[in-house]
Image 1 (cartoon, rainbow, N blue to C red):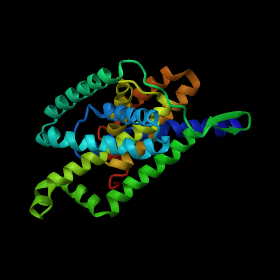
Image 2 (cartoon, rainbow, N blue to C red):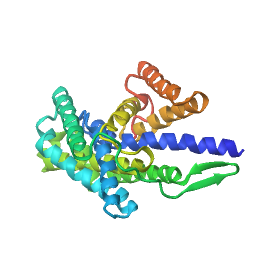
Image 3 (cartoon, helix red, strand yellow):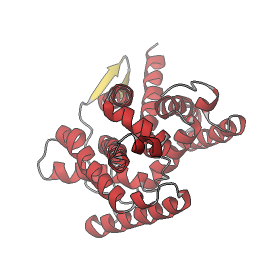
Image 4 (tube, rainbow, N blue to C red):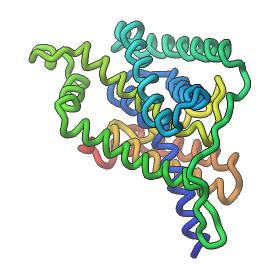
Length: 289
């Protein structure tokens, strides 16, 4: 029984990890239709914010939960104002621009901190014993935080004026503008929110994964696969894609090792999109947020 509980918690952590790295992209790509190839670098910047802050004596919880989303959210707003705002509706141009941005960010961070792994941070909270097995208390914390974050984004988009304006603007910007909504401001805030969520994810994962300038490459493929497999619904799609792909990845990782887990995740996504080209929420949960 203890083994079943331990395996179940590891599967939950794998699902939460996938949802955490994908949620910010779901807002920027799923909602705004902006192909942000710098998503991995936003995660990386969140991790470096935590490393630099803790090395400067800032409490690790303040660094992860406040500074990382704040810093990356501000960077996201600057990027939207200087770059993205000119490219809405031009997906290929946006793809090329954000690819260039990702290379720029990697180059800048490498010049400042070097190409090696930055000072690592030990995960807080210790371990939790489950019979003769042990699981990281910090991994359990990440499961809880991911659930709370999904709930907070859902409440924001569903019940606040900002969420209503953002959803209306993304669906029909011309009508929103005709009704007096400042669509430029809504685009800026929405992109900044997506960047802040991404920075929070990068900061929370820093104690587990470590941080180096090219770490974004390990995140971005999984994030895009999850969001695309989930389909048009932002939160329902991200959650459904994370549960399916994270569960498959976790099961095969347990049975055959991490390499086969990654292969199984990719093959599952290919089969899923072949059977359901519009993603999971194109077939199910169509009216979900």
